[in-house]
Amino acid sequence: MILKVLVDNYTYIDEYYYGEPGVCYWIEVDGKKILFDLGYSDIFIKNAEKMGFSLLDVDTIVFSHGHNDHTWGIKHLFNLYSKYNINEEQLKKKKIIGHPLVFNQKKAEEGEIGFREVDKVILKNFHLHLSKEPIWITDSLVFLGEVERTNDFENKEPIGKTVIHGREEDDYLLDDSALVYKAEEGLVIITSCSHSGICNIVEYAKKICNHSKVLDIVGGFHLLNPDEQKLKRTLDYLENLGPRYIYAAHCTDFQSKLTIARLLHVKEVGVGLELRYDERDNIR
Image (tube, rainbow, N blue to C red; front, side):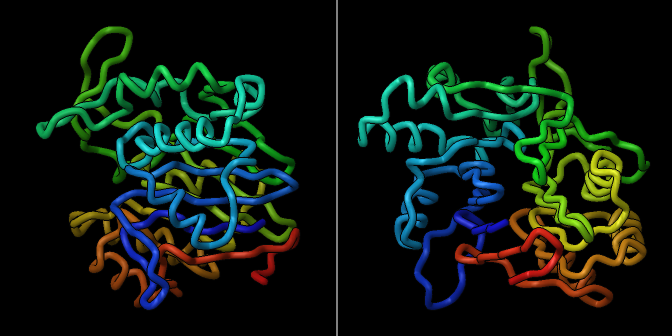
């Protein structure tokens, strides 16, 4: 598997990529080319071009959840396809994967924070595969679907409101999910925002993949000024888990990274990061 960070809050010094508070990862695995989230603007396209590869032959787009900093890039991707005359038949071969609630309305005090109504028109051009159940994209990469929430310290506060079956409700981000790469020797957890809880995600990944060993965790942990108890229990869980590396990104604040780094090996993440794994577990 190859994973490249196309969008993150940070960029590496002297590489001159664009950054924004969002997520987009390019993943190549088992002959498939996948975009995991699309960021907020068109910078994922600009960054891919600077890295020297095209997004025209993407097979699958996976949305981790419906927030704007992960979905609004769909308009720019569609415009790119239109520019290069990707026809209707070709677009229908490109799959969009997500939870059934991923496109539902979301709003907070500052206004709409979910998938835009104007962009929903674009979706009909693609092959939609929405599921609460896990979806194996390839033999070694799985979309988790609706993550089981089994602990008592994560995802306890809603973020704004959402509309489900025509009724406005507190939004606990039931649509929040993740990807997992299953190597012979263990799992690589690939998260985006971890609204469902990074510990919940890891436990569910272990269950779905029938594997207890977690090698690396890549992505956002949704630790933004967390209360002391949540941070401590997350740290206790991760210390007991013992992953090789933690690539804490996007929605993980500096203090949380620093706290985790006191006990575990935390790696720097920014636009331009490239990770390569073989079919066993080795980073190449």
